[in-house]
Image (tube, one colour):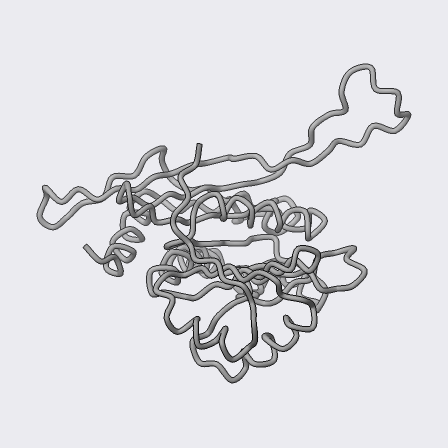
Length: 274
């Protein structure tokens, strides 16, 4: 069973009190209950006047739950340094003009008649031809500092389902403060065939999230300078899923090597309080 970190939950009363409370939260996640669609509109409008750079990680109109990301330095380092390594490889491959970074843009759940449910990622992007206002990214990176891995798993599932499976890869980057390690997970989807003996005449595979890679990175302080131990090897991102086509000449999958992951870990630990 996954161990949840302690994340605060508060009940919404008014916009002013909410933003005053946000300033006192030390972690990177705040859950707010009893948020109506009109309340959410007020909060969204007021955010423009607020200087902490909060993101609306997820809003569920039916349940009235709003999950807010409060970016800490560690939270931002976890996703930005990972995304930048991918961007560096785009440049090396000469493909930077074929890719569009979408940052923390807001996305509304497809098929939501009211258009209220939605969310914002940490780092996102997709092929340039997917750059329209209603287009979803193919790559999403979500990170967690005080938030739990279980919360990140809920985020991952939302991205696949809310995009109607247009999102192809979700990377989760979590710093586990108890184990003192970084956990990286790469999730994709695969089809599950209809069960044997089903009476449907048209059997459409059901897409389900699948954990393709899990990498943990720990710090060895017995060496000087400290070294970083990476399990299970390099992180590989499939070209076909990112660009929605087969690679051409001089094109290939994107591999973040063990030395690159060790450098990434060094950047992360510079933001960790011992």
